[in-house]
Image (cartoon, rainbow, N blue to C red):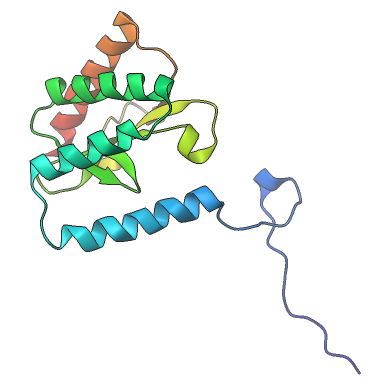
Length: 161
């Protein structure tokens, strides 16, 4: 009598009944970048090295995202000079004094998404009631959007200490 397979297909509500294919190639590449970052961090890079790495990642972005990311980089540095630029999963990120990432720029092109996002990690403590946003799609930086980002980054720093 043939053996029955004990393998079960993994289904996700989001996949609408399709088998899960696991991580995308872009996600796997980001994880490999994170491993390289962790190995490199054993040499304890300084703030200048982190800045160089972030600017290099921004330079790799398509022109439209590059312009937005450069402006975001400047806004974050001006709003929270204590944050240290570094890469995180191959993305520009900004860490507190403990080295924990507070906020990050996720290029849409890196993950084949239609827009760039600017996000916060739990260290930001932007808690507001029972539900609050932790990532924002960024398609344009108007004066109002820049003011909102500055306010959020400053507020994030209050919770990250």
